[in-house]
Image (cartoon, rainbow, N blue to C red; front, top):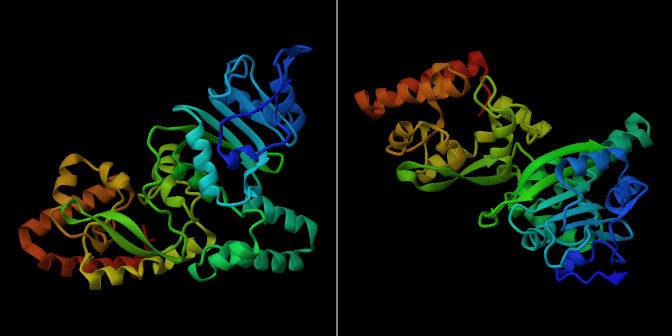
Length: 377
């Protein structure tokens, strides 16, 4: 057996120790790679991995708790698939740097499979360990200390200093968002034996050029008049890094009856309440004061949402400044098609009557908001 000496970044080197290359012949009809998956993860993990990766091909590296196995005949610089059976949230240091290390190490279309203990799994463990009243108190304190303090600008540095060696506390949405942010495209994910497993593929272009939002108040990059990108203020209603998952959520679930991504797991519990009461969009009044938005106008969309519109609507939208309250709220239309129809009607009215039409749409919107209880989009 030769010492495994991969030319990889230090963060990835620390994943498993000791590291050895072992031959991968069948043992009683089962390869060492599959045998390791069965021993450390069980049948569920083995099935999940083999659905994504052909273990018989060269370039498969599995990192376990105490050893590593590299598939037969592979040059150590040609690893195409990495399976890490260690918990991602127990990695020390900056997770974004660590995931970028893996992204850099893998070739295009290289597959990375990993696992973590998500917040929901951690919550279940706490409620199994303590009586319900005590569990609620423990979970609230745990949430405030390990989820809120690391995200606030005023306390983030102190938390990292005091809790450098503590596990990272990640929601499902944040974990997948960080992977997308690093440049991976999500293939699938599954809950197996109280662990959240994910599989991603390296795509050619990384999203690291844009910064993730962490605080309660943040700016969203949105397409405005003339195609200019402006930062629109909003109160967070989603988990951190969720902005990098919009394509994935829409691709998997489409849109619901009110024109929002369907079965959107990125929303937090308090975020749903904020959206019901439209509190999440109150900071957009700052954009109105700055001159970025009107009170009434087409909704400022992300680049992904903007490109999903018909080309003729894209061309007309950017002739006008967007608004806080969109036309579909004023007209009571819902769904993706309803939103497009409402914008066409509004823009036609704007061309015909000018900016005075916004007064009429404003009072129509107030009526629907108060009596129909529309949710914020």
